[in-house]
Image (spheres, rainbow, N blue to C red):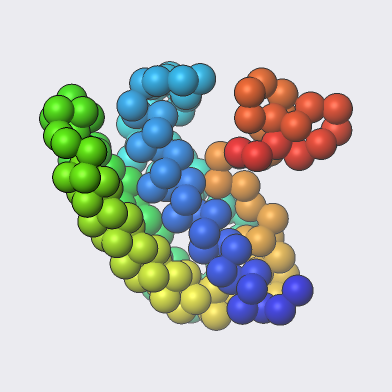
Length: 161
């Protein structure tokens, strides 16, 4: 796999985990309730996962500055998740075209955020050694693949989420 493709996949995994997963869990519907992150806030959950990644990467002193820049941006996104959540009750009262227009605007904002996150990730990822890049590529933002249940593949097949 090309290095640029791996970086994009890793970036999407990390950003998706931070932005999408925690926001969905915070909504409290479906199978991902407020307890999905063990009762922790998105900030604490992301902080714990970043701490685990940091220890797995075994960064040198020269790499720490890039780590702090990248991980700080990820923690900042997690801190802002709750305030970025749409008001679902207000959205439900809007006419369908207005509701869709607001959804489209939020998607544009998220795309810009992901583009910024990708640039930040590329900058950090470029400081890693090949071994560290492999460790980063293996890292699972939510702690591993989840099998079974409504989103899992079961029977040894990978799940969708």
